[in-house]
Length: 264
Image (cartoon, rainbow, N blue to C red; front, side, top):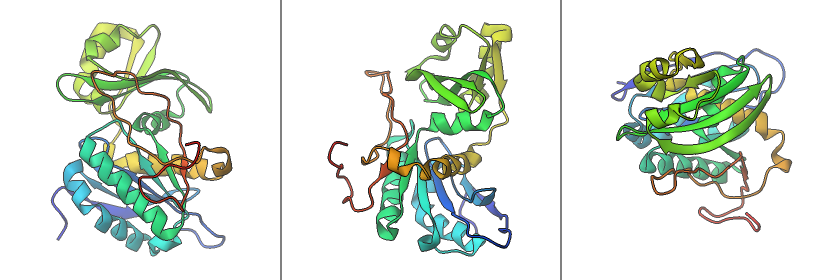
């Protein structure tokens, strides 16, 4: 019997021939959560829970479930990728600790990305300003601004926590809004900004883990160029609204949990 709130997994069998590097992605940043396995060409399997706190308690078991769907073991994976937030304190810590444990146990690399980066990855065909926006409760949202031109993506305004009305005052050109905040505040964005607001409501939070894994897949080959530092959740508090730039990083596999590499 499936755990409460679980959407049945889907699996795509790999084509024969060649060696596939499979990456496990984990996302628990929002109110929901997901895990997914991807290779170079497709999503192999994914699992989604509607509530991240419940998801956290099932996380290790669901990793085993998606591996079983694909017919591989955790040891067979080429690496792990985890969403660092922003999001709920407990769910982010559980996801990161789980990912770190899997990486250390298998000797495979761990790659982290922000939830903002994962959301921007949904709109690869858009040229211009992208604003990933997430519900932050208390009538506020987490948001950031990116400029996307083809395959070049540049952060133009770092993460912040703000009200939807205040966020609108920061928009100076046609902007694509994407993320859970669009579901709640998309109408407000459209009414306030008119033609400057393009709201994408079709993004499914259950697909975020696959995007996180795909970002990890892309960065895995550039591991030698990334700083060797322990990953930490990205929190945005009202007293410190700016989210420092935190590019994807590779965790050195021989680091004890909770330690940081020299210079990290």
